[in-house]
Image (spheres, rainbow, N blue to C red):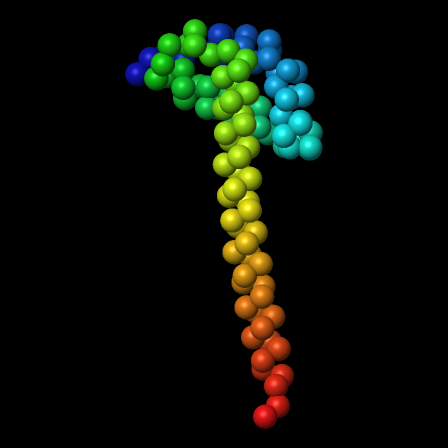
Length: 102
């Protein structure tokens, strides 16, 4: 396992944070989520830099990582929402059935 060069990651962050914020804001439509996405990207970059050569990281790579994280979270939240809706429908259906008079 390679050691992480925190100074290179810090430089990469400062050089790209504004660019990434504007890109990710277009995905998320929410500034807080855009900042969270930047944070998630750089956590992945730290993990990535432990396994691969650091020179392969550029803006397009950072945007692609952010986009993939965004899509994964979107699908996860969509799936959780569908499950939550199904549970609410079952609970509403149960309470309505208990009021039936035969």
